[in-house]
Amino acid sequence: MDAPALNSHLVVVAETLIARANGSVDAEFVHDLVADIARKFEDAPVRDFVPVLVAKEAGDRLRRLDATRLIAS
Image 1 (cartoon, rainbow, N blue to C red):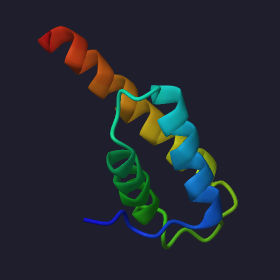
Image 2 (spheres, rainbow, N blue to C red; image 1 turned 180 degrees about the vertical axis):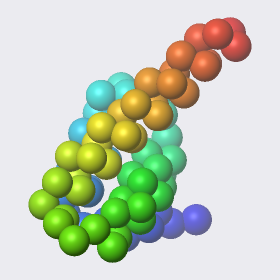
Image 3 (spheres, rainbow, N blue to C red; image 1 turned 180 degrees about the horizontal axis):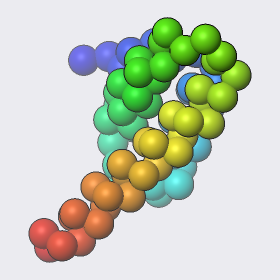
Image 4 (cartoon, rainbow, N blue to C red; image 1 turned 45 degrees about the horizontal axis):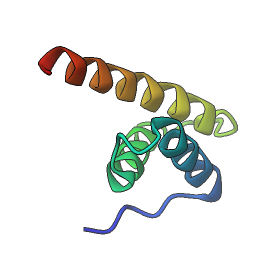
C-alpha cells in the first residue's frame, strides 16, 4: 500500500522522524502516522503550526512505540 500523499512540510516532518529512528521504524509506517495525525488538523482555521503539532505528536507516539518494544524484549 502506498503512503498517503503529504504536503511538502509534512514530508519533511516524516523524513526527519525516519532519520531520527535510524532504521528502527518502517518509512511507510511513519508516513502513514504523519498523515493520520495531520488529518486531525484538516479543519483547523490556522494551518501554520500543523507541521509542528504533527511532528510533536508523531515523535511522542514513536517514542512510546520504542519504549513498548524495549519492554516486550
